[in-house]
Length: 109
Image (cartoon, rainbow, N blue to C red; front, side, top):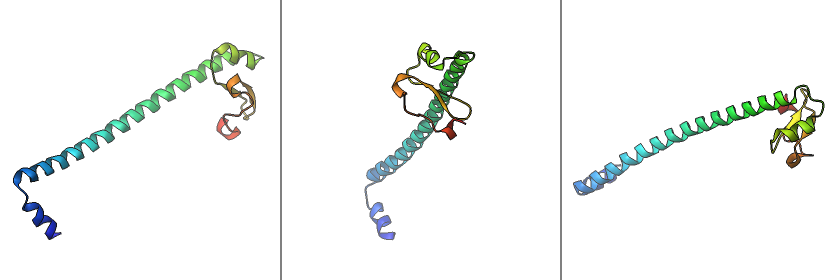
């Protein structure tokens, strides 16, 4: 470790200050980037969760009392949606996902 330290000390003071400043600035930028990333990720997850909960509530209100879930999905205007029973059985799907199960029975429960 001594040869590196003595080599650094032989550099001109301007170069040593420049290297030290660049190191500190890099650390500050990395820390700031991590804080921004985690905050934006948390906010985005919250917005997505709220939107999905709102859509689920809207679909629940639309489907209550209907005997034809396929027609209710068509009238809902949702592009991609599926309706499941409480036990995980698929009742209805919109056209883009018709015939494909988006969620497993365990995920529905």
